[in-house]
Length: 158
Image (cartoon, rainbow, N blue to C red; front, side, top):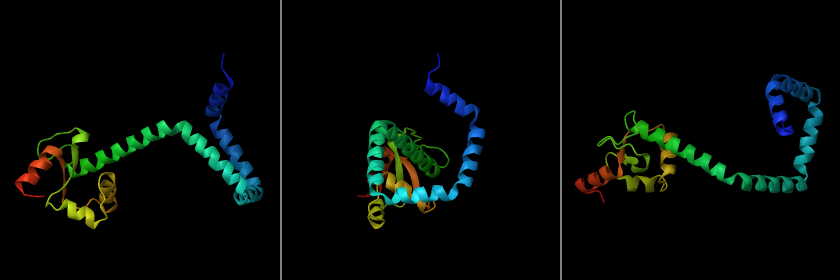
């Protein structure tokens, strides 16, 4: 026996084009009424309170899945940046370490701490986003934390 929710879902999938067409026709025919309703809805402060409470309740129900999606997106973005600076592969350019948790971006000429303070103390993901926003500038490479530490000691970068 199929329940109502399942039936509605399958019906919507089967008749998606027809439903979309009907909705478009209705929206065209009643455009002014819809605009007026939306305008009045936005002006009523009671609706805003109800909407924010409803949104909060929805967020609390879906908080865990939202966090999982955000973390997945962040890791994919980090992998993309590290791959760019790792010469096409997500690995340390010195020792080929490929565990994402071990990898980070290194300033080739050193001075990363000064540079981070200069651009507003952006570390971690903010720094990866800064790299993307600035068109992936030259002067960076993907290194594992061990190779970064060895480089610091060898070049007296403290």
